[in-house]
Length: 225
Image (cartoon, rainbow, N blue to C red; front, side, top):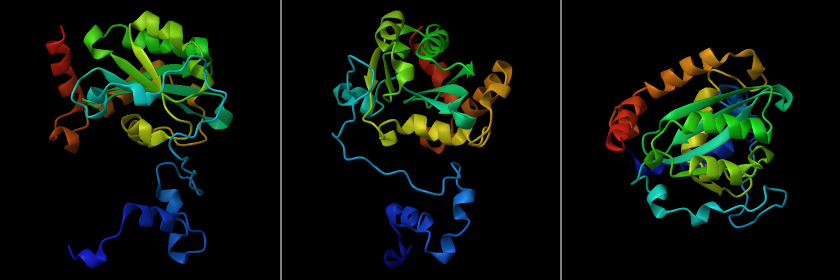
């Protein structure tokens, strides 16, 4: 509690990834990502070409999604396995921190991803699938049809900007406890994925006043039924 002893978060990360610091040796192995080098942050507003066509950027999303005041705003991504040959789709609802996992196995093409996201989200009430934020990966090439099928607005993040999907990034970090980097995600069944999904959704969260995402989301579903 002494101000002079406080360290900024950025200072801690710089120390962890400083290869010349003796104290940092081996610390990266304790991180969920086990990443030895830090990914560079891009300057907001700087974009790289090659994303899906007809994108609507995340800065056009409703402010009600940004401050979590309204339910039904989701963030999505893929976590990939060894050599990017297998993947799991991850969907996180911002208000309840509720997680849906999409079993893709070794097929994470745009068509397979759209089909998986549709299966996961279409049973939800319309008020709980208002928007979906994603990065600019090729798996979202079919986003126009996906948005039409779900009645959902899809927004895209800037390249290399995971902080624009913070709820989803936190979910992906938790998933790496179950599926470490470099593993074959196709080896895990849809049934096992549902078990992991249930475990995450029944974990009490401090940000939810120690309620579980499952409890909060069930209440939201009741409100929108």
